[in-house]
Image 1 (tube, rainbow, N blue to C red):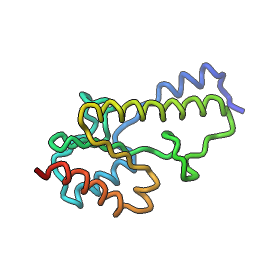
Image 2: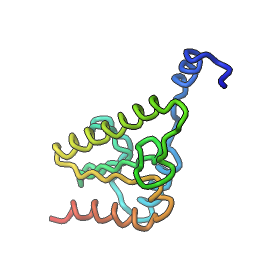
Image 3: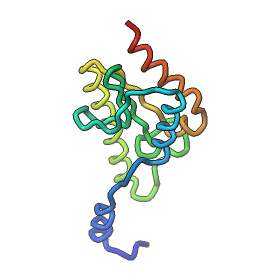
Length: 142
């Protein structure tokens, strides 16, 4: 049982703003540096969806998707809560629809879109690094 009314809890939660990169994003940033990939920018506002990492010269956009927030179909972090299920189903389904819309918009502009799941960064960072390296260097080959 919550000690606040629904309206008060909603106002409190709405006031919480993110600061800086989340740990998964930091891990991908570390991978990019280890692979010595250069030329990336973070959160480019002029691109649909503001990709977590973008390689403008290679036209590669990288999104680091949290398993819970983006509805990972394969891991337990992607499970939706049973409490307030309608809200969470709508929220996460909306995120999935938005991700698809953003991916389509970027591809229409000629960008390669890489989506990396949180669990893959944690379990197999080498594979993630390889995917990123291949996408970026493939785009640079004449």
